[in-house]
Length: 88
Image (cartoon, rainbow, N blue to C red; front, side, top):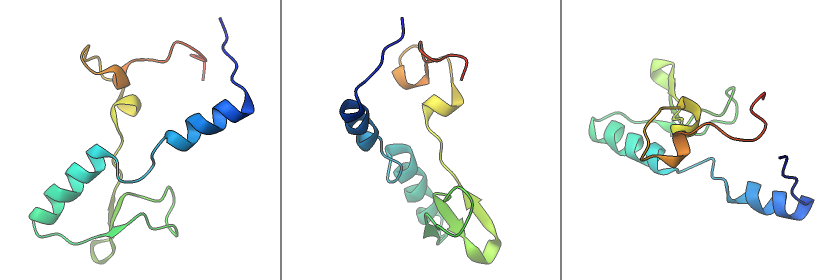
């Protein structure tokens, strides 16, 4: 069964989705900083606005959460496959 949201409700939902400073990203940033590495955040001039940029090393780190990795852990609700629009 397809579920269609109103434009207003879809807008509310999309505003609630964070793209910066997520818990996994903050954990990686703390770890990398504690190792002595320094970095820049979310450089808009690079494709995909990577989470951490190491300009001198010409390296980037992008942190993706459970949804993108689609792991099979039952205790994590974010790792499950969507039930709607599965073809996408």
